[in-house]
Length: 460
Ligand SMILES: [Zn+2]
Image (cartoon, rainbow, N blue to C red; front, side):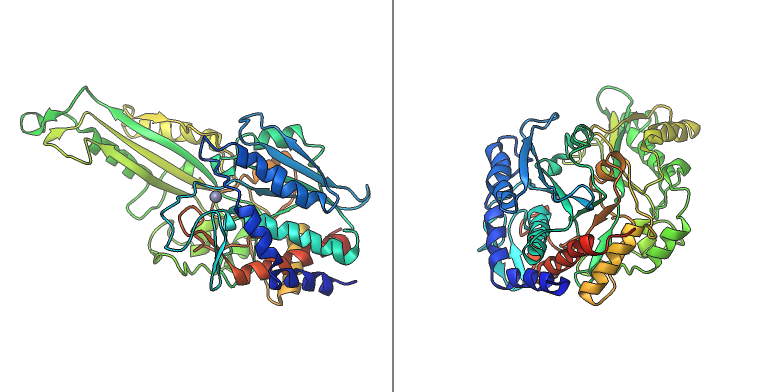
């Protein structure tokens, strides 16, 4: 009975095809949460895929109705071995974005896992079925090896992540006791590089708002009225230019972080952002003086997602009556989204743009989160991965993208350890979504080692 054996079991489950079969079964559930007509598969994934799998390991499972949207239920599973043992909360989402049937490469289809070389294609394979399947399988390997886990497990599976996780924060509040734990360990998102085992401890967050300028009814001929009538497109362009400069530097103090703490700077200094397998990086874009890792993990960005005036599809010679833009702020922990609208209002008013209307986000926004690199749980996880892989994992205090991590770190008060099992080129929200087999195999081994260490050597 040993750590090595538990890890070997995880490797064997990959090698003999057991894991591929499990993933194939789970991917076969067409769980499109973004499709309002999709109901049954979202429930059946929990009752028909996850519940039997967990019950086989003596978990007690229950469906929990979603207070925000009845179509998107939750599942809570529990396996309690002893009051005095450490408890882990793990999480995943069983829903996917739309299948995009017919848009996949010839020979591929969304709801069947198809191997092509090292790639395992299927909708939800990377985001997120494959990732939570790896983690639950690894728990099974530790259980088989030790005949008990040596820790307690709470599992939370949601079916609405691709809809913005409606109800997740409420469930974490309502079920606080059932979800209580010492640590949160889950998987989502990409590794920093396919070759590099990665951990992250939080995520940046998102705040979208619109700017709108309505000057009058209808367009007016530019030959008769140009020079006499103000052009809302020109004014809005100048307003945006006052907020972000021509090289992407944010010019509104209240939309920028106060700085990057030294501990975070040191952690980011170890990371290499290559942008491999993506578009070429523009080295002169963004906040001057920051490294690439600091730009994407340690700073905020303000983007224009859309800009409209007149009729872009059929421009005419007229002064358009109105202009509109959607702006998008990606921000790090320490920035308070509750203040953003007031900050932008004051910035615009101070520059003579009082006439521009600010429309706050339609969707609920959540705070960004971040884990200090010297947190004992972060160091414990880094050491565990290093022992299993024989090389040091990358540790990101937070992901550049956004996950609903504050539900776990802020509402449940847990240290949050994320171990991503995918990579940046996985096409997760597009046709041809896939996992990379070598990462799956290493992910199974990593998680078996990590869960083994939870009983064996948890941090004090
Ligand atoms: Zn997704």
